[in-house]
Amino acid sequence: MLLERFATEANIFVPESALKWNQTEPQPGQFDFVEGDSIAAYAARKQMVVHGHTLVWYAAIPQWVSQLTSEQEAKAALERHIAVEVSRYRGKIWAWDVVNEPIEPDDDLENSYRNSVWLRSLGPNYIDLSFRLARAADQRVPLGLSEYGIEYATRTSRRRRQALLTLLQKLRDQNTPIDCLALQSHLDAGQVLDHVELTSFLRDVVKLGYRLLITELDVNDVKIRGTDRERDAAVARHLDEYLDIVFSVQRPMSIATWGLSDRSTWLREFYKRADGSPLRPLPLDADLNRKPMWAVLARYMAQ
Image 1 (cartoon, rainbow, N blue to C red):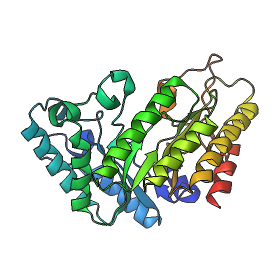
Image 2 (cartoon, rainbow, N blue to C red):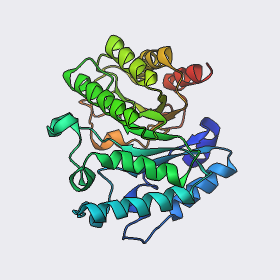
Image 3 (cartoon, one colour):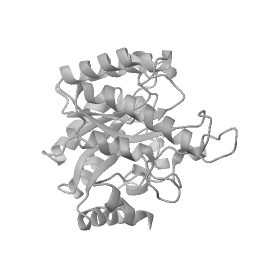
Image 4 (cartoon, rainbow, N blue to C red):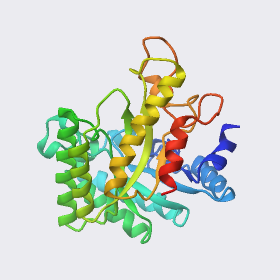
């Protein structure tokens, strides 16, 4: 029943896991696209578009990838994987998250790069290489760099905004074929959005020539007190405030939530409310009823 609601409530399908490396190439050169093909076929039947997530990430990789050490092996793995996957879905994927989460200031590396198998084996140029490989496999599909944790008036968000803008500037200077910044937008209704600095950051990104996407939206209500109705209203207000900031800079190319119904959200694995009640971070509740969050999304998407 939930799957059928996707076509009613949305026109974009983002596979959470089906296109990640550990599912698509579990062994070197042995590809498995059964689940990805099924999603692409469903989306085509329902006249939905598919957002490709994700080609290069530090996580969700098979053991053989995590054990890559030499530059030659890592480059060969990237070349094969990206060429095969992007080519297979050419014309079926409307946009790709090519590189996912390349920065992590807490890793204390130069320029705040994330300590990953790709950085260790190929250096920071793995980012540029990944995008060039994806562009060679599909000349038309928009290519995005995906990141999180940039929205709030905290030291962590400030460090991440600064590191991300520096990286985007570097990639633009070397003509890396990136079309857009994918704002994951895992929001927290208990935090304070940084209106001034987030707006300035997004304007700087757009000035560099990048478009914006919102690709993994949810609003964590783990610290919001009150009844379900009060919590849902707080989530909707927080989302309204965030989208007002983004839209004031540029209308994003798309808005996708990370899940549709509260009955299925990754947040439940990592966050527990003090009162023991389930989180309510998505547009539909556990019974698939539309919530105030849904109405906020509909209003902005109609702009």
